[in-house]
Length: 300
Image 1 (cartoon, helix red, strand yellow):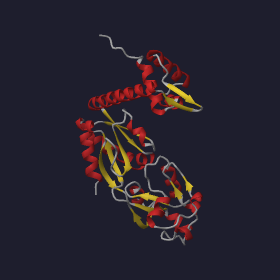
Image 2 (cartoon, helix red, strand yellow):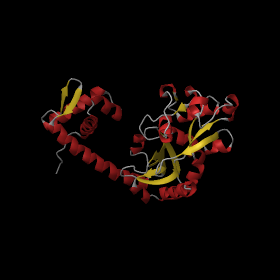
Image 3 (cartoon, helix red, strand yellow):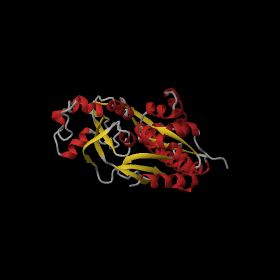
Image 4 (spheres, one colour):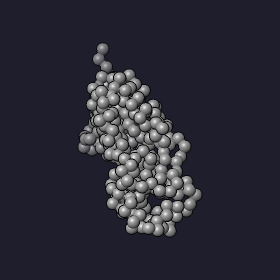
């Protein structure tokens, strides 16, 4: 018997628009033009025989019919996505790993050859400082900072958070009075380079650093925020300022003498970098081998 369903392409567009309550964001997510979103919504409304959205000024709201269809379609697509994700991961001949730009540049790439050898398969890398990108079906596993709670995903701790002030030897030469225990008086705030935490991940920032030390925050508006972590490190290496480093991420630069850790380290219990993955992925032999390799070579 033929199923009585609305046009599935149009339903997919409706589900995205309902989830975001925005035609614009749905268009961005699906990489289509906004007029196409409008046309697809109209097709679904024709099939249902009732409006699915109402507008109050610039605010887009679901009607009661729209709310019911949104709940049904989102649940159906979630179930389908999870089922297909497990199927594809077991059969694919490569692993795709997600990492922030800093972790990918400083931690993953120096180890990529050993990771491929351990997994006995190809490994590709997706980079983003927004961890939501790693929840897409094409990303198998990721390395994320956090407290170990990553929703329905499994997580193995790779290394705990341990942060310390980092600077280059040339910075000390130019700033002989620099004292990591008395930053406010011995370094200009514009020389305190801050990666910030634009996506609310929980990364250590100067604000968090000062809060942990119980110290007043010196003029945060004058911190130089550099949202690209590799770029910020390049500035530190060039002697332009100091920043907060994470033990394990800059290890190679510290071992080479290009960076120096100073002052007392600070850490938050439970926080660190984790290997994050869906439980279904454990059925893949390549992932099992890679996971064992990473856990064995990083945990301390």
